[in-house]
Amino acid sequence: MDQSKRTPTFNERWADSRPTKTLVFWSWLAICVVTMVIGFTWGGWVTGGTARAMAEARGEDAVVKRLAPMCALRYQDAPNKVQKLKELTEAGAWDRAEYIMKQGWATMPGEKEPERKVADECAKLLVATNK
Image 1 (tube, rainbow, N blue to C red):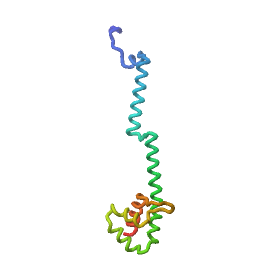
Image 2 (image 1 turned 180 degrees about the horizontal axis):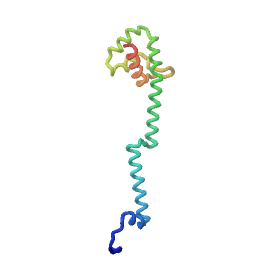
Image 3 (image 1 turned 90 degrees about the vertical axis):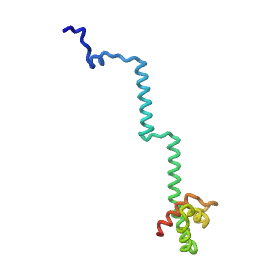
């Protein structure tokens, strides 16, 4: 059998290949783009702005969770608290925060206006603990 007519195997072709600089550059660029796409879509990567916004939202939620029990304590000091709790539970879910804001329980010491998110959380807390 004539050796010159034999087709080279894959390993032989791989060993003989010499990629050009252009091929190497575009290959690395494609790998970088694919890595970023996978990282941002499935890997959980976020930009700095998104991370900052997420941290601010979590911080605000933590403050609201800490202030809601203070609101519930202000309810405990209120006159006619049994009647007011009955009115709160009879109010619709959308109106409960407004009711608490009108009572002044969600206005924290040193503040002029009640905080809506605190009132929402306080309403959930009061209704859940007094069922």
